[in-house]
Image (tube, rainbow, N blue to C red):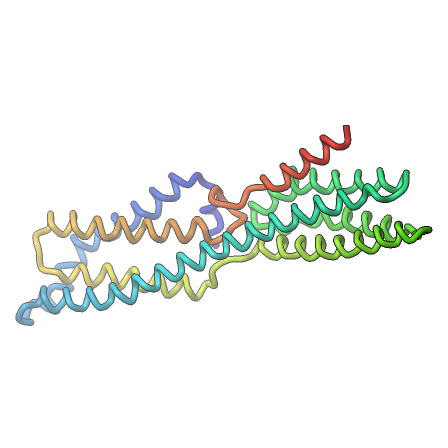
Length: 263
């Protein structure tokens, strides 16, 4: 339901999330903090007690944020690796096709070039919208059918054909990994825990008995950092969506190689 955040520039998303946290905190400092302070004001050294609770909570919540940020970054690197592997296997498949006789060789290489162009021009924009592209499947099937139609006549052709089939299976596996990565993200239950933790963090700070200007400045800085961490995790949550996403640079490099060899 929050996928619309990937349709706006990063700087706007950062301002929206971080600024939203600060505004929520300032609102609570004015209207909610006086009510919460009454609950702890009768306790001797209430600020010390609230400080101890905030310190203990901050340790666990900080660990949670750190682990989730690492998980988001790990998802990003895994998807980046999957894209690179597919591009590498596509290059190897293109090179293996040179061992086939004409006109099959040109047909195979044309299908691979068309597939690479499709991934860059059409598949990537769809992935950035969270849509699993299906157009590449037709091209992969066409390549496979042309490959299976070939009957080796010599031992050399048998070796080349077997290696190409093996490389095709590797390419197909890497392609499925990329398509699966379109929907890769942090589980919603983690977002629930992080959100609840952020609210609890703000509530505890609202309980401090201090001047409003101090509440605004110190609490505002804390809220700004919480919002920045939320922005970081959200921006990297979907590795193929938004500005902080895996680019098609690997396929662009492969297409350049293909076009250089074609002409």
